[in-house]
Image (tube, rainbow, N blue to C red; front, top):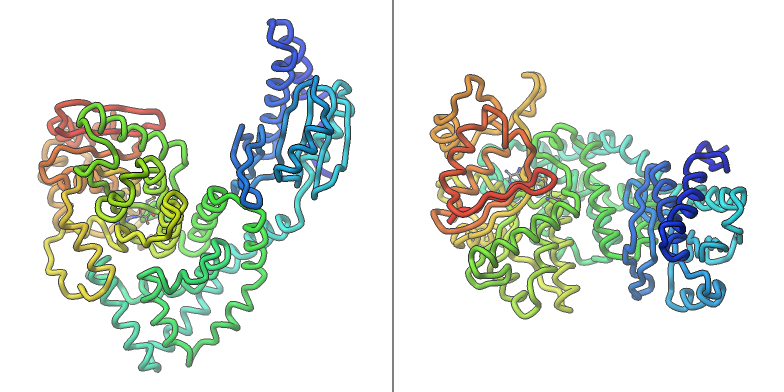
Length: 554
Ligand SMILES: C[S@@+](CC[C@H](N)C(=O)[O-])C[C@H]1O[C@@H](n2cnc3c(N)ncnc32)[C@H](O)[C@@H]1O
């Protein structure tokens, strides 16, 4: 029996009837009162299931954009139910017919007019209730929350099983790769080329094991890009996936790829089926964000920790992009698409900031900005792939044509400060992109850098790596000017990213806009950092909600 069933005596039900009564008394139109009270009730219903109620969340069904009055999203951002409110005077059945012709989602949707409610599941009417009767209201809500589409049950089980299986699957693949390192000359040659690419872009001291892990990540996830996002040509079009494929192809002597993919069918099929229920790209994007986080937690918790593998909630991304837009206009008299505005997200993860910016830049300026002045860096393979797809999709949606995002680099941002000879691999597309970025006069740096002070114990083996130039800069500035006796907190990757960003402006007027927590604003160890930031800001420093900081240098 389902534990969270509603009964008339339960508080949310009583509160609903109380709200209807009191809202009506305040003089609110009866209908408005009924609607507000039902929305409040659904918000509580959602919260009790661990879901979120989102008002007016657009969804694209069969190519049409529709906006139900409410959507209940589960923890993976997958819709579990919808709500559509009508007026008392409306003929509810006629209104439902209208919505049906507009292709409203009919898998678990309540249509109601404050008095009557009709519930549709799997495209058919399954229940009709009188909302003025508490017993009937509870029955309606119980059928509504207990509905789980079959494919979603399979999905939840498959994700749980996949998370459990990932370490074993990865270990099996790693064994095959180790054998190939020893005995397969074609693999050794292909691997050596990719290894050099990683050395030049990511870390000159990168271990062979770290690169082996990338091959494993690629093998475990690339089918999702092909099927969830309908990008059959993903591995051909993405410049890094293309390089990885060459290495994997050379494995064929030791590894039956199609059998491997067949063995994972239970996982892919469940994800693909769920993805099919997500018509809207933004839902797929949110869903992929979840897969990204969950995958890393199962695959490599230490990597997830050192690199800060966590996506940035849309509200924060939206607030920060809007702030930059506003500051560009008010302080610099220019705009996001302006020819003098060169934007970089140095730790792009799944590309959420770039997607938001692409949606803000006026259409007439977008092509030029996209081709020349937008840049994003990512150090991990899986988020890099997701970022490429998300950003390129956002651009194609607005411009009506696909164009690869050449501003995206597979690179360690902090490593870019090291003054090294990097023409070695200029024949490779990724290195060309990195070079173009290095030569660009960046003026806006926006993003959510990783937070990590370092390992908790010497045995953890997940130490933050050392960066000659940036570490020295932090020491000479933020650390030298700090009065704190314990300065350990300054080894945080976030501090390095701030130092790097301010230096990257190379004395130009510009903006650095990062997500931050409060410790940077009031903790003693950051006194030197605050002093330096204050010195470079002559115009304004803004603190937003979520602790987001905006630093402006002029
Ligand atoms: C907090 S997440 C950013 C999330 C991103 N805004 C999103 O919504 O997906 C930090 C990201 O920075 C990446 N990262 C960490 N260190 C990096 C480095 N040195 N260079 C480039 N990217 C890095 C991580 O792999 C991770 O994807």
